[in-house]
Length: 118
Image 1: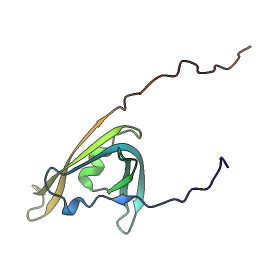
Image 2 (image 1 turned 90 degrees about the vertical axis):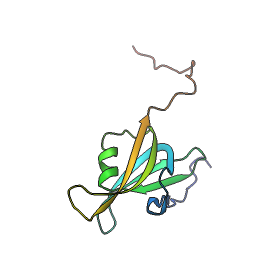
Image 3 (image 1 turned 30 degrees about the horizontal axis):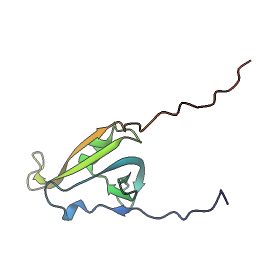
């Protein structure tokens, strides 16, 4: 049957808080969910090269870095460790580099049907 039901599964979450400096994840940026959990956080979900879905909980740094990214882009997130805040002494935050690029097309279909226009 063409319209078989598929179960919605929760994506695995990348626990960057236990990651080491330089650890990274990458994949196709699929979607963003807002106001999730008790802190009303953002959650960003990717499809990895193996086809798995993985999510990252937002933070101030990640929310700023993701602000202008487009769904469908390839994204790589590199964990840079914890840094001490310059504005709030004694407070630390998780830092990241975020890279993005347009996904390259594999091929273009030559036989795309065009509608008849009268």
